[in-house]
Image (cartoon, rainbow, N blue to C red; front, side):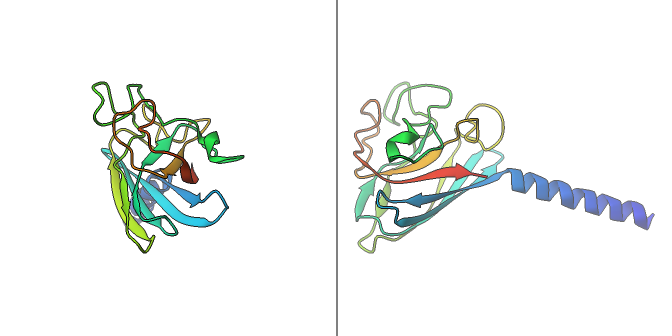
Length: 169
C-alpha cells in the first residue's frame, strides 16, 4: 500500500513539474546598443499568460509594450516583425475589430528608469493552439519609444523600438 502511495506522489510531482516547466518562458530584453534592459517572465495560466517584467535603463514616460510576431531581434529590432496578431483582427483596444493578441497596455516608466510590472494577456498561450507564442518562428517582446494610441493602424504610432527580447522556454 505504501509503495502505491509513493508511486502516486512521485507521478503527481513529476506531472506538476512537467506542466509548470512547459508553461513558462522568458524574454531577456536589450536596447539597440546591446545594454541589458531586464527580463519578462511569461507564465501560462488557465485563462492566458501572465507577464512579469523587471525593467531598467528605460527613458521616463509612456511606452508601447507589445508581443511581436517573430522570435528575432537581430540584425535590428525590425526582425521581430509586426504585432503578434494571433487570430487576426486589427491593432488596438480602440479598434472595432481589435485588438491583436499581442496588444498590451502601455507601460509608465518613472524618472528612475526602473519598473516592475505584471500584465495579463488572455489572448496568447505558451501551449499549442490559437495564440501560440512558441510556434516555429517564435515571438518577441518589444518596447517602443512612445505610447501606443490603441487605434492607429498598423501599430499604434508607438515609434521606434527601444528594447527587444526573444521569448524562449
